[in-house]
Amino acid sequence: MSLTLSVDGPRWRAHLESVADGHPGIVPVAKGNGYGFTLGRLARKAQWLRDRGHDVTTLAVGTYDEIPEVASRWDGDILVLTPWRPFVPPFDPKLTNRVIHTVSRLVDLEQLLALAPTARIVLERMTSMQRHGMSGRELWEAGEVLRRHPDGRLEGVALHLPLAQGNHLGEVGRLLNDYVAAAVPKQGKDTVWVSHLTDGELTSLCEQYGDFTVRPRIGTQLWLGDRGALHVTATVLDVHPVERGDIFGYRARTAPKSGHLLVVSGGTAHGIGLEAPTGDQSIKARAATLARGGLDAVGFVRSPYSIDGKQRLFAEPPHMQASMLFLPNGARVPAVGDRIDVRVRYTATTFDRIDIS
Image (tube, rainbow, N blue to C red; front, side):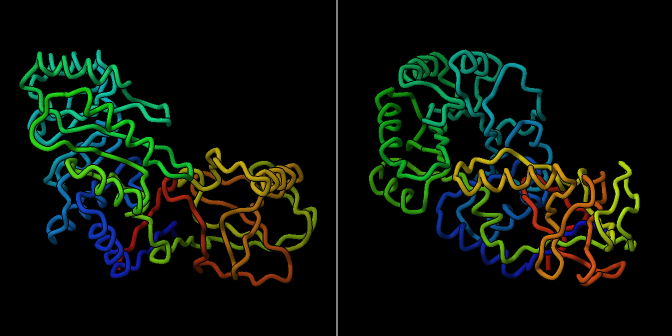
């Protein structure tokens, strides 16, 4: 009676090892809902990769609030991707030597080192993404701050690049030159922590900047890169025949024609029916949005549930833990207890069960 993520364990684990092998120094990213797997499970899998001899020394989380969920399941360093701010809640002081802070503002660097003089720090350089980060001038000033706080441990520079297509190497080169010119005091070899470079770009970066240690931060490609190993299903909880004009649902809608109502597991509490803004600006994507809007206006909205390979319509908006689908006459009607396929956005879905073989 659940929304279930079934994982082909051998295939998924082989994929994880393949990605780890192909990206020396990989920093697995475990944040948010853990890409559908939960944070704890991803932390254990990162530990599994490390125990099997892969070059995995650091796990990245999104926020400070996520540290406790991974710290007991992973024994390496923990990089927090969201930049440190003075209002960050305190974490277990026993983890101080394992936590690496991302710092994107000079004022925060001063305050963090005043509060924690031996803090481990990654300086974030602003990229064309324009989210967090310091300018080239601010990196130079950060070097001055670090010289005034010699116990602070600089772990390198972070670059969070946009997802847009195109080669990022030109931008990365300019940003790394700014970092080198800043002459920030460091311990050992320079390190660049980078997100959203292609495999080819990472190879070129390693070749062009051989004096840097490159640490690719990878989430989606690692955990969700082999979609064929993942299968999401819902349980059919009830089946009701309806005739045209029959009233049903919370909002007393009427059946547009005869058929069946299916009550299936999965609702808004799981993320079903919740849609994030899309970044696709193509004509095809805009046409699809207009089509969905037209369906919604007359009471039909395509659901993520499929029966015999065909997506079925929501009979009404999803409930909290279940959804109602409309199945017209002529279609095969599943029985109560049957499983049907569901297409989901993993980063926005919470599953009742996760079965890994």
